[in-house]
Image (cartoon, rainbow, N blue to C red; front, side, top):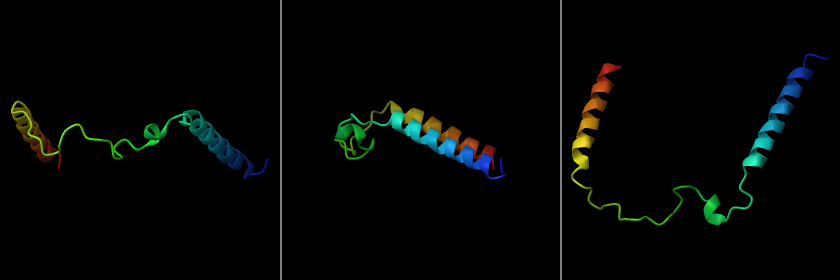
Length: 75
């Protein structure tokens, strides 16, 4: 075989494998909402400006404190 034949066969095999995986994983029978993007216009359950419960604030403050600590630990 020539020098170019083996890499060419490898590339063709890789393309065929990628197309086969894409064909197996495709959603041919899915309806339109099943094929839509995850955040592509679904109806929200609640308004974006709703209030959050107070019990989440201490955890949020702890997360921010430790996140800032990690930011300064790894420059």
